[in-house]
Image: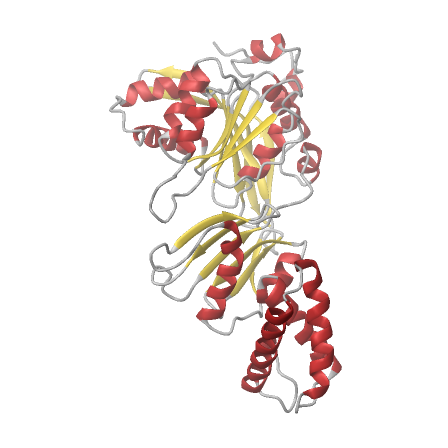
Length: 437
């Protein structure tokens, strides 16, 4: 809780703010004069506070003294009022909408906290604390910034004048414990049959696109699927902010770079995709395809780089196809739509739709085969699909993940890699299973 969110009896919020400001200024001068090493700063701060409290003209109860000490440590060594949220393992995302509105996501649900900042300048100080050590800046000339914290958490900051109601901070926390396919099954994100099918597809080197909306869990699923790539393959990962936690030994991690103050030195996802083709990759993994690199990615998939994985921002498998068409056009090549669709249909084997449902749960809601072209249209066939049947009185989504009963056309590729999946996985019996032609 922030110092400003509660005041003891006999001490107003304004008095509390003055007290905190005085202590901070005193400590800042002390640290500047002693200039301790970073690992010694906490001990110096605590020692100075212990000497300072008895000299104050106001009586500070022990409980408030502990609270002030914690807030001061967060202010000088951490990220101010939001540090306790970053320390909370149940919080997956922290959102600061100006100084008076701080929200968190816990277990898929958004909640407003009681934490507040002093003013816009306080939020700006914390933004600077976060990004300056990373060699980034956020000011009127560069009002938006994306960065990655040392622990891997992803941070976005937007400042005045672009952020009208005050500086904004969004931090997506990095999960130290990598999820496994088994855990996704236990959480109900997919069925054991879907997990077995996806494992076979990854090892058999199918090209897979993970489609999903913001915060749906695309990167988490990409991480899980990437973890199934065999150890003897060379993997190149390409991300805006490195989040993937691959455990394989032969991994090259590439990350984009923003332009410097002079506007030079920009390295985009497209630059990295092009460069990766000269690195002899067995697999290329793109964190999110969001621009002209879609064309380079499709060409790579079509020219021997099987088993590539990428995510795209879209809400259904069909939307994912439309999204990729749009992104290919952003490459600046004046290609006919039919040619683009032919590129997509021959490059992409599978679209896995990841969704965040209304109750906050995250599920794989469709696994869809890209089955080729009919005329000018790409044919999509659902192999598995989530069917929602209702909602409980407390807002929980009721539904089932079901196989469609159809075997994918790429089944021979799975069998050639040693995966002879039983018909029960696809929801059909041997006697009545129909083979699509």
